[in-house]
Image (cartoon, rainbow, N blue to C red; front, side, top):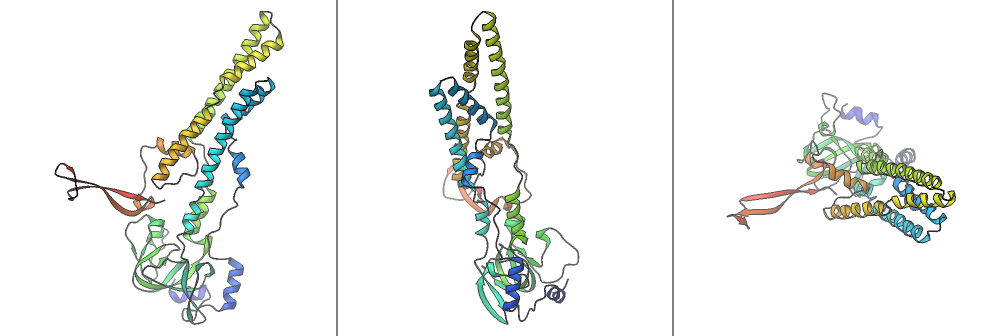
Length: 357
């Protein structure tokens, strides 16, 4: 599709731009140009969600039984452990809910737009489909654009493509249909940075309909799967429950056969079952995972779910087609080897890539 066809399809004018009435109408129909957050879970629901784990449910049952048996000290101790476990998980998840905020920070605060024949600087959230935007070196792209004019234009798109080098852009129609963002040479995408040259483009998508918006949607709708640690803990909990029940039945039957009172033997069997459950296990696991999360934070990596730390620890190989997908494309010298020892002369250099978060 050439520029004239694009102009006609979006009902705009590249020399005049949109008028105020048309902008208001499009804002009313499509909403503001911003990434929308999904329905957030309330703090109360998030806190109670920490107690859905099977081992925690087992401990709560043990607490109930301990209270019925009059073992109030044991019941209070178990409740304290479970409550501490819930608090640790709650605060960690609240602290890590920043993935969408990180994407929002990539949006351009203001853009240059053509309205009623005049170039204006407006907040990027007020941009609508059909707007004509111009941009130059150092600017962030405010929406997904079809480039209609440019001069030596290069745009850094690593957040979307993982390519470490800026993409060279053009304004010519593409001869073949392409799906990959990195192959769309006549497009500029929301949140990417202009590293060289300047250009003009027609807005074809805003807000959640942009490439960045699709990433934001994936972050909020990603399916949650159990980690290996969660599966193992659930299996352990089931084994402990079955073992405790079998021991209870054996103790009660043996005592009754030997002539002891049924009620007394039942209490003894239940006490044995409660004692067989390791009350401190969930708390120990949570504390260990929290320490792992703190180490990750020091490396500027955000972990949304505590069990994900263990999953990452189990990984031996991470396959990624582009380093920029996981990093900031910044290389930092960490060690210099010279004359058989660490020194200042650059002979052998160890380099690490800065983490993306």
